[in-house]
Image (cartoon, rainbow, N blue to C red):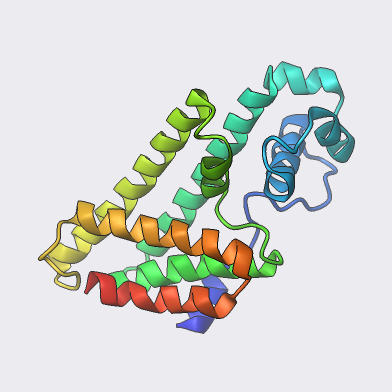
Length: 211
C-alpha cells in the first residue's frame, strides 16, 4: 500500500511554483499566495511581499482580486479544488476497497506534508484556526468548503456500504464527520510534533473506523 500511495500521490501540489515563465499574473499570484499563506498565515502575509515574490505589478493584483481578503478567498477556492480532485482520483480507483481508497488519499496528503518539511498541511485547517473566529466572510467560505469535503467523503462511504465493505451500524454522514475530524486533527497535531510516524498511525486507523 505504501508504494501505491507514493505513486498516486506524486506530482504538483496546489502551491508548487516551478519556473514562472509563461504563467499569467493571476496564476503567479495564486501560487505564491498558497506558499506564503502556508509559511506566514493570512495575517502575516502582505500584498507587497506577494508582489515582490511573484514579480507581478500592484495594479494586476487589484485588477484580479480587488483586496487581500478576496485574494485569500480565491486561494482557498483553488485549494478546495485541488483537494477534491485528489480525493476523486482515489475514489475512481475501482480495484481498491473503500478503506484502501481513503487510506491512499490520506497517505498522499501525508506525503505532501512530509515532503514540504512539515509546512504544508491543510490550508482549510490553517485558515480555520487563524481567521474563522474573526472573519464571518472567511468562516462562511470555510464552512462551505468543509461541507463539500464531507459530502464527497460521505458519497464514497455510502458507495462502500452498498458494495458491502463499509460498516452499516453508522450512517455515511456520521462516518464522514468522524473521518474529516480525524484528518484535520491529525495535521494540526503534526504541525507541532512533526512526527510522520504519528500521521501514519492515524492512516492505519482509518480501516478500523469504517469497516
